Amino acid sequence: MIERRRLLALPLLAPFLTAAAQAQGVSSRPVTIVSPYMAGGTSDIIARVLGEGLSELWKQPVLIENRPGANGSIGVSAVARSAPDGHTLLAVASSALTLNPLLYKKLSYDVDRDLVPVSVTGQVPNVVVVNPRLPARDLAELIALARAKPGGLIYASQGIGSNGQMNAEMFRLATGIALVHVPYKGSAQAVTDLVGGQVDLMFDNLPTVLEHIRGGQLRALAVTSANRSPLLPEVPTVAEAAIPGFDTSAWFAVLAPKATPPQLLARLEQAVTGVLAQPAVSAKLGAAGVAVAAAGSAELAGRIAQDRRTWGEVIARAGIAVE
Figure 1: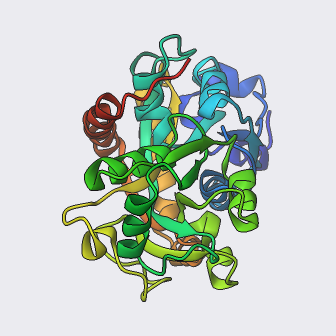
Figure 2: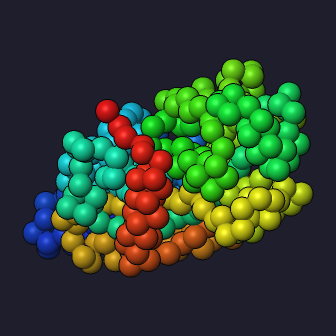
């Protein structure tokens, strides 16, 4: 007979095991949360904070596995192909769910067919940041500079089809300015080159550039959300500074393989939203610039559909294509 303490090590899956399986001593494997990006980005930050909370809740290891590449597609595909048993989850940025299906003709996964929503986890504004040597101290001056030098300003992004590119293209379309786009493989090198002056500006998640702003290596001109960030209260919104109605945020979510049993999904949703509701977790993410947005599977599905409509229009108008 299995000892009681061993059974307690299976809090996530025990309700779904048969009595016979329990009697045979089914092992308690660690849960893996896949972050389909390089370590250090916003999605990775959220995954690690969430993983710590879930590990404490479940009393079992929760591992974070970074599987970057192809704008998140490699990691997402790995989760889509994994067993639907609650041991593998996906912590992902909205772009992999909404932009990739619009841009890639031969995507290695289908969000609707291969994955099922668990919960929204958080959202962050993007920040319009420039190299401090650029003679633009606010958004109006940036727009004026771009108009005076059509095609003379270079903006970096995290990659073709990234949320940063979408925000920059929405901004470009709204203002009528011409910008040159240089895509990178993630934020890290793009931010490094922006600090070094190889590129002029960038739209990036607040957590990624916050310390560079505070340290003076980058200048923040505006945030893309409807409201100012409490971490940068002196920085106006894009809507305030130049484009009324401009309102975008990058959001993040947890998903599971499609065939995950409904009862298990309900428990996963309850666990994730419960951890995110903890004041300590909210404070830790808030200090990094992430606003907790613990919303269940139904709202997540709605967000995916809405963003596909919004960004589909931007992609069509801007003529964005992935080879």
